[in-house]
Structures are given as C-alpha cells and as structure tokens.
Image 1: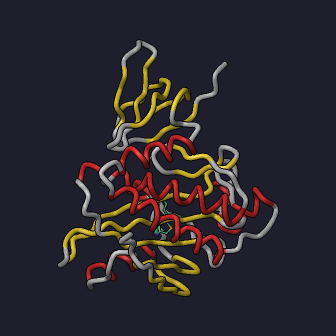
Image 2 (image 1 turned 135 degrees about the vertical axis):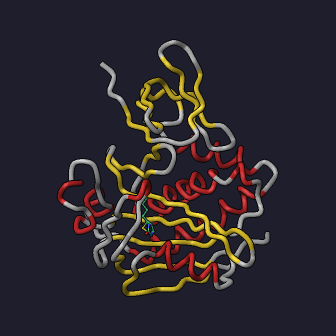
Length: 250
Ligand code: BTN
C-alpha cells in the first residue's frame, strides 16, 4: 500500500510545531513530515486559544498532509487523527480514552489531548497541518485547568514514554490516513470514531455554535464529519462546527 514514509524532525523549543510544519510544507516538505518539540513558547489551540506547552510535559506534535480527497471530506482528517491518538494511548500507555466531537480526547471526562488542523497554501498546493498536543504529566496543566484537564501520568500513575507514544501515533496516523483515502474511507473512519466515542449516539449534549446554543441527544456522525443531534422538539440538526458539552441527565 502506498503509505507515506514519516520523517520526524525534533526541536528543543519552537513557538509552535504547527507553525514550523507549515513553514516546512511551504518549503516543499512531503506529506508525512512530522515536527516534534520538547516545548512550545506560543502553542496554539482552537478558537485562537493558547495551548500551554511547558518543557517535557507533553507531546507537541504536527504532521504535514497533502490530502487528495474531496475538500468536503477534510473535517474527516481531525476525526481520523482523534482515532489514531485514541489507539496510540491505548497501545503505548494502556490508557482507554473517550473522543468528544469533533476532536478532543478525554480521560475520566477531562481533556487529555487537543487537535488543531490548519491549512496552508504552498507551491505544491494546499497542505493541511494536523497538530496534536497530549498532556503527559501534571506540569502540562495550568492550575486554572486542573478541574477540566488531565494528563497521562495523572490517569495511569506512571510517566508516559513519549517516544513509544510518538511511534504508535505516527503508525496509526499513517494507517488511518490510507484508509481515509479509499472510496469507502469516510465511512470506515466514522465507524472507527463512533466505536471509540461515547458522544457518537445517545448522549445528552449542549451545542454552542457561534451565538447559538441548543441541547439535544446525539444521533451519529455523517461522512462529512458533522454530528447529528436530535432536539427536544424532535428536529434532527446537523452540526458542522461548534463546541459540545456533555449534559448530566437528572
Ligand atoms: C485544542 O484547542 O484543543 C487544540 C490544541 C492543539 C495543540 C497542539 S500542540 C502541537 C500543535 N502545535 C500547536 O501550536 N498546537 C498544536
């Protein structure tokens, strides 16, 4: 199978592995180039948030992809990455996690990992940078996030082996990316995602999409990556982008 051959570039310190991967992509880097840093001084999260990235406290990782799949299927790239992270944590850290739509990895309902996909125009066409930040130990968690975030060491009681996790993650990304490119790729990835997520179906959630908030029960994922939610009035709504919070039922 025509899988990419991952090349891993390692740095002691970077502003952001996503920025460095985008720079490498613009300079012609092939698909599969991975950038890892021991610390990030300007780590980026979704919605312009900061991603705390103290030295050796987390896995700060980005990969360059040059997808030749329909642009409508690009949200599947973050779902595919979430599946790969889930499997890597299980394989290398014996930690079973949950995936919150679209792409947060949770352990005991707290955030353990975030994924940020960004596009960059390059001379060889548009590339996608998929950035992944995994909290490995407590030092990666700012005090104000203690209630809502967790780390691998906090969950397993043992220090995570960053190299093992990295190797497993790169293998998984390569495998699932190849699956995504097949004609039935989106269906395969949606099935894999749903099998690993308690948010896929039957979960009471509150959705925040722009200025709008509504609650309902999740009813599966579409093959473009959107989440179906049934409202109390019985309407089935398709959520393409937004934040999801689990609601506790009385
Ligand atoms: C989120 O907000 O949940 C996404 C966080 C993504 C953080 C990772 S860490 C490696 C890569 N480089 C960045 O600057 N951000 C991503």
